[in-house]
Amino acid sequence: MSLPLILQGIMAGFEHIAYPARCQICGYMLNEGDNEYVCSTCISELPRTGFEKYRGNAIEQKFWGKLKLQSAFSGFYFRQGERLRKIIHSFKYLGRKDVAIYMGRILGEMMQRSGFDNDYDYLIPVPLHPSKYRQRGYNQTTQLALGISDVTGLDVREDVLFRVEKGISQTKKHREQRWLSIQTTYECRNAERYVGARLLLVDDVLTTGSTIEVCCNALSQIPEVALGAVTLGTAESR
Image 1 (cartoon, rainbow, N blue to C red):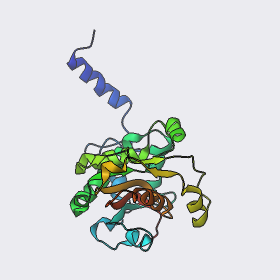
Image 2 (image 1 turned 45 degrees about the horizontal axis):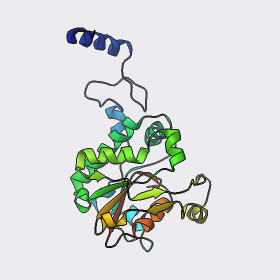
Image 3 (image 1 turned 60 degrees about the horizontal axis):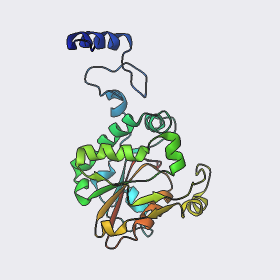
Image 4 (image 1 turned 45 degrees about the vertical axis):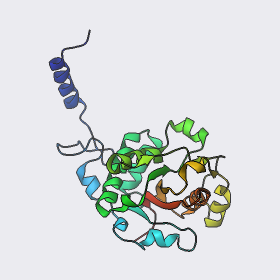
């Protein structure tokens, strides 16, 4: 038999006092007005790029002469040891997919304020290899995309871009090696469903841009498709 609602409320209050919610980044207790994942101080101190506000930004320039993109931007600068690194680590390795959704909502708000979302029909998460998905239990870029979708209303589609073989760790490779090792790992399927569609690729961190290039080259097989890219962070320095 379930407890009366008033008793459930009292017990929940005691649980909150005994085990107060803490910021996933700094570890301090969350205050009233904070969201339930990251405190307002940590969010306000994340280094925003502002790239969503204008075309021809540093992210778009990265792909000039390589890809034909409608637009692209990264929300924050990614630097070792800083808050964004801890946020990404929490949803890639600690199971906090709820944090990924929350950060996706922040990206969605950036897009909505700048009108960036008006350029696209669907959100396309960069897919994980099936073995990596089984190990992690979810795709963190899908969670980011779901957060963006919560704000913008754009649908998330996972039936068009697929990871077809397991890639080797890219961490210590230079650009040419990265390109060669991942160029066969993504393929486009069900292209007929997306003829003329405007697809926005979603990823967590942009470093060399190799993953974006390979994914967009695969999606370019779709007739009359228009492509763009958004990432939570970029390793580009100021």
